[in-house]
Image 1: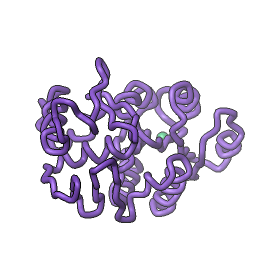
Image 2 (image 1 turned 30 degrees about the vertical axis):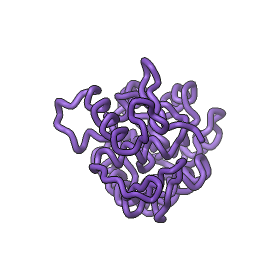
Image 3 (image 1 turned 90 degrees about the vertical axis):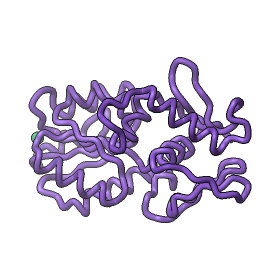
Image 4 (image 1 turned 60 degrees about the vertical axis):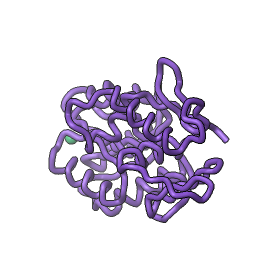
Length: 231
Ligand code: CA
């Protein structure tokens, strides 16, 4: 799955512009209009990077960053309205990772995001080039969206492929069902709930696991969710 980016911005036109630009680059994007929303949804969305406006209607971007830093080191790109806010951004002890002064070009924003993701996570974050994940006997071709095991083609639905890609991109990282649901919600009916994820995972296991009853690749983390096996 593509890197997930959370945009915290109260101006709909700016939020929309940033969202479109990042989605065009292949990222998954969530938009929230306030700092309070960003903090309350952060754990569920589990973004890899946050684009954070300084001026927000409730608590401001500085306070959001301060609170986010208690739970995450995910890179944060600040959006500032005026150049005189830049001094404050640069001087922050908690540290934004980068910033842009409005008005900015969305192209510039996309290239900053890409650079930050690469710095934070390495090549895994690159959504641009066709890459292949190799995990044991599994080969996941991200560009052609094909999966093979021991050379044999495995047919997955769009949702199954995206879930598998997301899990396999970060072996060992545990995802809650709610986080995984966020990733596939676009394709699902609104009433989709966390049990939906169990069903998808069980289908993926039937297809990729040599013995679905004793999964080698996708592990259940009891009481939490799922993680792709390390090694
Ligand atoms: Ca604003």
